[in-house]
Length: 100
Image (cartoon, rainbow, N blue to C red; front, side, top):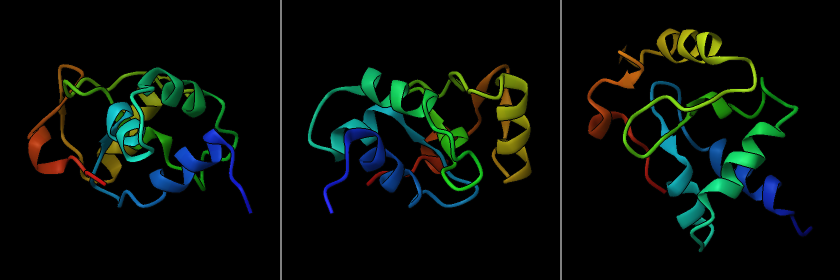
């Protein structure tokens, strides 16, 4: 079965365990490109929020970035998984980032 771009993004994202985050750029690179904005669009179109944890995708500088459910919900989800956040940024970003 051939997956479209969004499904390929979601497939990668489902590998990211609770308590870890990845970035739009990491997903784009893992797919062999530089289309991190396209990854962001794919995350915004995710209609399987429980199954595909797009709240675990953050900006490359450690900022939380957006979330279809709102930034407050994204923060709550990440913190419930053990990710520490301060002033809108992931604390100890280098230790919690998941690279493919």
